[in-house]
Length: 271
Image (tube, rainbow, N blue to C red; front, side, top):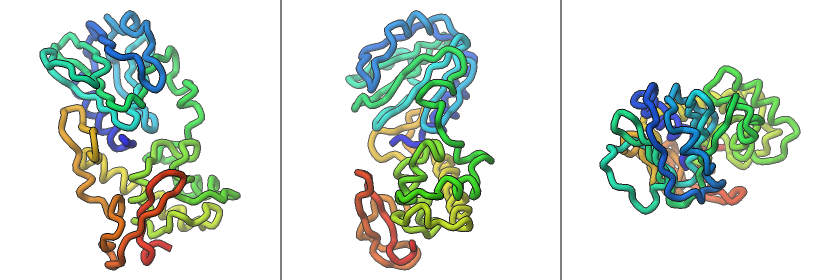
């Protein structure tokens, strides 16, 4: 968390306000993220103009002309716009000061996020180069998932969360999509039929689009670029609902651990 819908919501909100804006300054208060913020970042970015914003998986790509700022929000990060008079708080680690009087501010209490600089094609960066297709793209379809699951003994939930298979699907939306597809999260990926793979792809897409339309899910620290919380958490069908009745059949939902992640499912609906 934040996952793909939260990053896409952030991208859309920021792009409307900052594309074409000149960066007049960069303030780095704490370099100690998952990897240190580059020391030369203020010199590299000051005077640059933000051309556009893109997303790859859970990474936000800010094209600054001479290179790309690659931002990952980690477990607790948020990137949003504030007025230049807004005082920075304890966990506000980085500001991009814009000519229009606004600041793009990064807050990351756990400091698991990333702020990196890449010259040339950002998709060649080692963190992005081996990613699978985007889940909302035409390249990700039932056939692609079926091929990726052959000879895979791992649980299907773990496979769809593997960024080498498909980019950007995190724990929340894997749980929700598997419920919508009526697929048990523990089934071995190699046991998935082509038809079930097609259904799962459709439900992944459906779930992500619904979450983006709702502004993402706000469980702890996440807010969108306008400072507002998302609302998709109000529509969770299984996530974080262990012991509560299934909305489809009334059976109590179960919660288990898979590869150190929480999994929620209906033992009746999901086979």
